[in-house]
Length: 408
Image 1: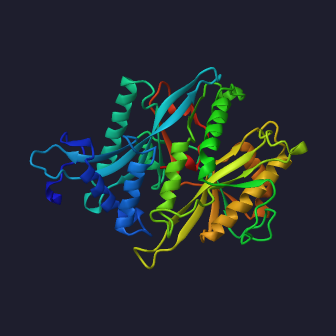
Image 2: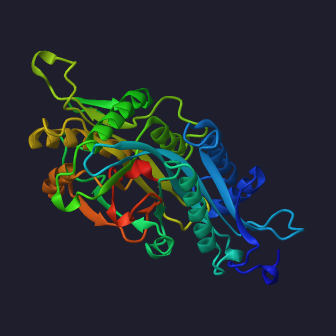
Image 3: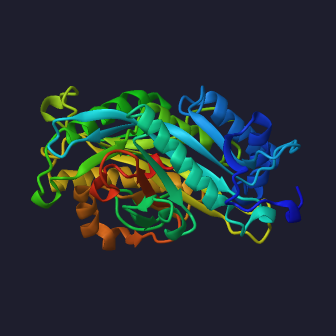
């Protein structure tokens, strides 16, 4: 289709459609220069195919590829005017008094892309309009099947807000890898602090199950703030499938990990408090975090910078009420020491933790000078945004556990 024959975005012949396998691969090839730096085209496609077919989150229809195309007769192959993907994620919605915690599906929108020759014609906006309408119809036909949608904007807040995805909760803590703090002498130390267990893939199933149990319990309690007692609380569940997807993506993105590491790498760290008599069954005051390393480098352009960040996917305090500030600080010190060591090992420039709980943020805030950390309010990239398809207004919705694990 030539530029002169392109239809306007408002044309009734411009439609949203599920992409065929060949159209999906077309989208991967188109996005590789922008999102596949550090990977050859073959490696990039291998990663996307692996995630699609071998991860519990994406396979068997968990991921849906979409294209904006035309219904004009004779278009073969169909033009891909714009493209995106949605990932169906387990989620929960809690009533303000906590009496009802409902299991629903949230749809994460990812990989929104328009090829250069089709830009500045309103196609991406039309695709988001039609996608929102399709999800709204799904929720209306089967309540809970599309209660809300999340996405993470890299183009600022305005475009997606215009299509009803509202930015919410875009703070993170950032720590330089060479910063102070922790109990170790340096980030190059290979020792593990006392009371700290390095987490691998083997720990994922049990700890994500426990995390889900804790999050459900949290949302089942009434909101204490009188000014927020009409607020619905929602959360994407940090379950096994969601974190596994991140880990498999990391395995295919870091150097030397195609198709994957020979042995499990350190995926996080867990603090277990010392107990009288070394009672190993008393695990109520554990604190743990899982993380991934995200890398973009200059394989496609020698002038492109290398940027590697260790992102905490999720940080969990098992028993907030019984964990003192002093113990929480000790736990965070130990976990951060391992995180910084792992970050240094892959050449990362920083460690980031998105939207930690108010309690964790308060403890870290007191220690920012020691850790050489800073509080960052994101306003351009990775902007967590939510569209609500249930009854009521998105202004009455609070996104709980809005951490990196929900990104897609």
